[in-house]
Length: 75
Image (tube, rainbow, N blue to C red; front, top):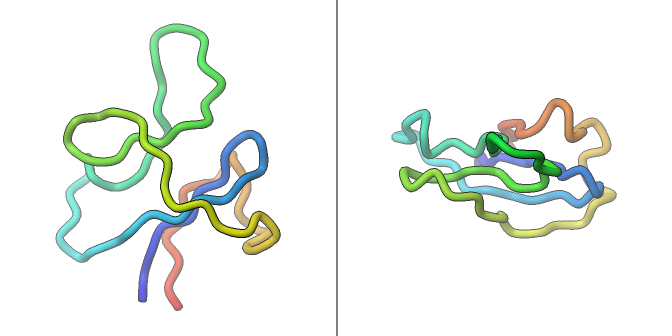
């Protein structure tokens, strides 16, 4: 099973679904606005709006940081 894991600046972890037909715009990515923004949201889907994924235990995946997320995880 594959899914994306992302950590926000506050240290919380979020899980996003994955499927093999995803296009680039539907893969979770950091949402960057043209004005100052704290970077805690990830854009998902074709509407380019920031959405939170499913929050999971922040102690899981200690190797995933805000700077290197989201990461595709396979279990």
